[in-house]
Image (cartoon, rainbow, N blue to C red; front, side, top):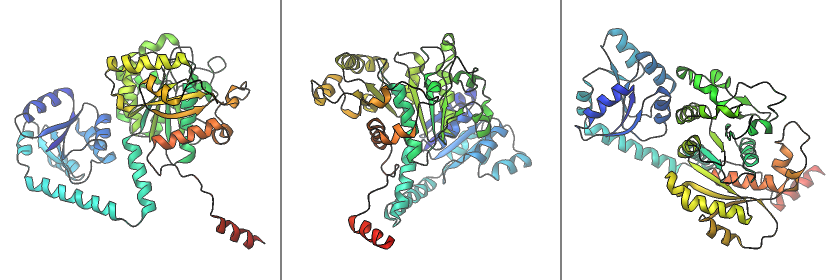
Length: 421
């Protein structure tokens, strides 16, 4: 049996030692309420053992229910009538602290068998449903939730990484019902480049509230409150697209700790379908942590010889040093000219990665910026760059997530014209 274990550090250590005596497996460990809520929907388990403060546990189970058919035990100092009512009414079982192992050992194999049969039955219904349109939508949504954190990284500056990050987020919200948050971790200069793209400038604007380092003070117990989370974010002029700025002062880069990146990620995952990290071109600890938390790393490279050589060094040397799985890195060539003195196969071979996407060089992006907001619907939908980003979005999201209007067959167009006449 796979057990999801959640509670404070002392509780976790105690239960880990006890469960070692059984033939059960601890599938995941959560030392915070936010992590537990995330694990409810991201790992496979047969039972849950919770050891948080009772009020936190009750709120957690009311807001984020574990999957159906699993046992939920809540460890408490004592079982009173009031405790029993609070716990039992939400489908959990209160157990006195120190007796958890007894309940774990008493689970019958029959329950596991029934749970397995129920899962098989549900799988069969999903496969044989006749509502194919609805099935595609559900499948796409589930797929996005499983693979929804993307890091956009380049080992060389000036290859259009930030522009690509902003338009990728913009394109996704324009063509889906998903909400997206772009997190700026490129803190190599004053202000935030992501913020500048959306019209928030470091010279003319006051220091905004939506800076990632402010999340260090975010009260963890309120991570479920969208109203509270929204106070720390900035909504763009595109509905459902938000961003989180990098530290406003360059000397604050040391505040971007691994713990902060992890905390921000878990909180945002409760409220957003897609999270996009825009990383700096160096390998600091927080960049590495963002890559580890990501499902996919979009590795951006130019098509010039210098960019290709730097990309090759990163893939062949740095990836091993960082202990990153190569299979989740996707090579994206950006700012590609119309003609190259070498083939795409040569670039792919030199870089050490198969080519995942190519984004053309677009004169529209070279024009001097005169508008306050740089991300526009025109570039997104009418330019070669925008159309290429749309194809990239379709590649990283499950099939059917992005619905593009198809041209009507000739006979339907013919009859529609006759009807108007």
